[in-house]
Image (cartoon, rainbow, N blue to C red; front, side, top):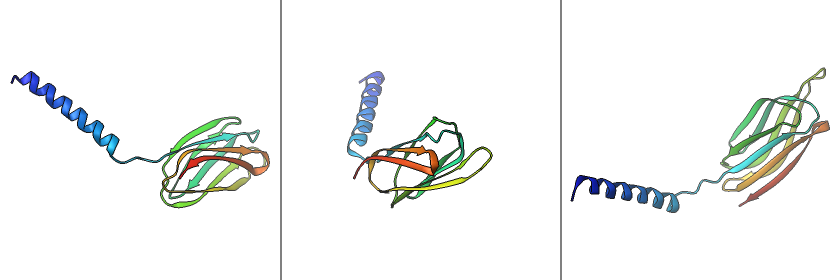
Length: 125
């Protein structure tokens, strides 16, 4: 057998092994998370806490959308905290639905005026 044929066979076997490992191996569960600022004003110091971790942004303009992908470890509620900008700098804290390890899907967090939020959870166990 020539060296070229051996290298092609090795390359094919390597690719096949990687595909097989990906199909038969671990499945990583993620929740695609979207935070929409519909408060009517810019906010700053956005922090979203979820079971075992958190994410955030320095600021979010009015009507701006922030995307983040999370992986759940453990169980617990989603908590959102942010500061309003302007003359009256006020910190808002909101607690949302509980999530559990192994869930996947999407979560929309819509920040509303008056320190309220709408949580639209589309996750499966």
